[in-house]
Image 1 (cartoon, rainbow, N blue to C red):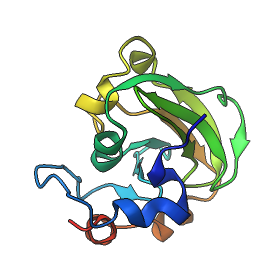
Image 2 (cartoon, rainbow, N blue to C red):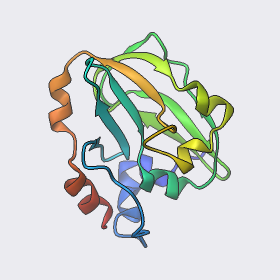
Image 3 (cartoon, rainbow, N blue to C red):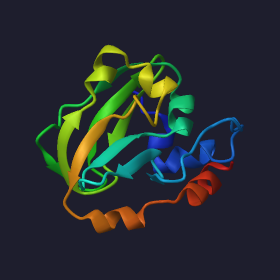
Length: 150
């Protein structure tokens, strides 16, 4: 299976500085990764994880999201699932250590939500972080937009 170019650090530079759509949205309250996932810490201590507007734009039309890690405790950088678009499949990487608690069932029925609402109804998993301080190591909106050349 081909891997999306942005998921491979050696090929990530190809997309950084590419023709970025200036209408892309990157909420200030989220944290981001170099692999284009985002993290939102909730008041109850859980973390919601999805892919950025940039990632969904680069992937194109998403047709399937495969997550088989519910109940597993994974380390930062581990693959927790994959996203299949019309022309490619890309691994999803854990941005922090934690137990995968839940998959967004809405995207199982309507994977296009990841394209249309990546920060709202298109979130991918909820995680119970084992070290919430790792969130501090993630990228701010400003650092992330600089990474992708926006």
